[in-house]
Length: 231
Image (cartoon, rainbow, N blue to C red):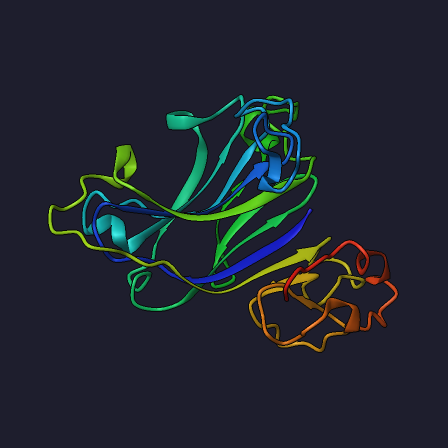
């Protein structure tokens, strides 16, 4: 459980289908893309959290963003989600976020909530079919081309870019408590906090992770879990 913030500017080209999303690490493929063994759980039983998707079938869809969950109870065309209008999604950077706890998942743009997935509200109860979100997930950032939601790729298409300013992952985020971790445990590319508070994963800030001093007792346990090779 926690909060994920990704500051990004989306591609404007039609035919592009950018996404910032998460899958259960237990998926029956190379789970988390860094595990040596496959998981044992098929999609959608793994759960999928689409922090941000933008479709590309027409110019209107390039002014909208979606937040969606996929579970055995609701997936594909029957998935649960919401959308919001964001006219400057392809010209300006915006922060796409989720706040995920043991009861619900909130979807936000620039810290404004526009959709919340709560299985009890939708289905009247919580079970493994509508809430597989009690296990670790991993992040994926990508641009898909074409397809059902990407739309036709123009014949003169050359390339497209989803620009990422940063990715920040907070643990145990709960705005109603006073003992939150106030800075991300993992951030990329360049955190605003001192090395003692946050690890920069894709940054030239620190030449050797062993040089980072974890003086916050809440983070000490994580200092040995991060390994960065060749800076």
